Image (cartoon, rainbow, N blue to C red; front, side, top):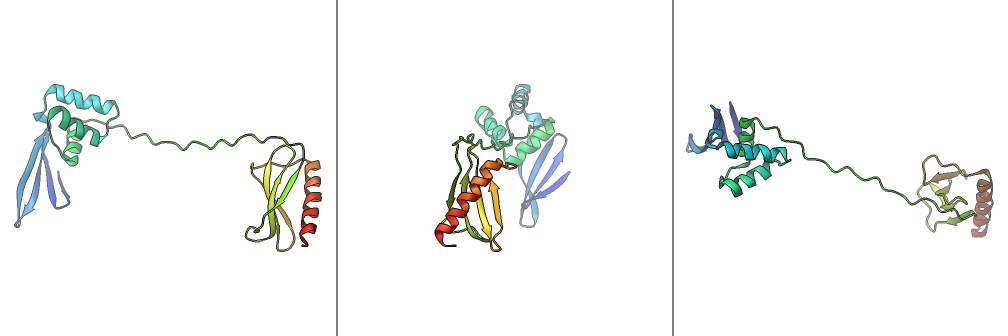
Amino acid sequence: MFVSCFGKAVVRKGGGFFVFAKSAGSLQSCAMFSAKQLSEDQVTAIITWAAEGAQLPDIQLRMKEDFGLSLTYMDTRLLVLDLGIELAEAKKDEPVAEVKPAPVPTGFVSVTMDEIAIPGAIVSGKVVFSDGEAGIWMLDQTGRPSLDPDTPGYSPSREDLMEFQKQLRALIESTGL
């Protein structure tokens, strides 16, 4: 097998590999390492490290610290392939869903107006319904009202909607719109 990588050529032969560097138009041997050079204890240790979840950089570092073998990343990768070791994929941290605190029922509807309206709205603001659920309201350029609750799919009670409309009308009239 022949692989060219960053100006180096790697040739695998009989359980080992040779790394050559280009020098003055010819190939010159840089290093040679073979899995056959490892003792059974060393091979067992490498297999154990991989079973414990060690990745290539971990194996490379431990080989240097424990066995005094300084290998490149590529050397380590080819060694793992020669030994037939399957490395476990690194576990990816799953994003933790943000837990919102449960709404606190207040018993009344509260409506406020933003100083600066959200884009596409004449006026906008926030509302908190009697059951503690909150949302954003707006009136668009044609005067149509819109409500975007914080909880997807939330629908306020009929009484809360009527109180919201009454407070919204009073709030808009008090600002002169």
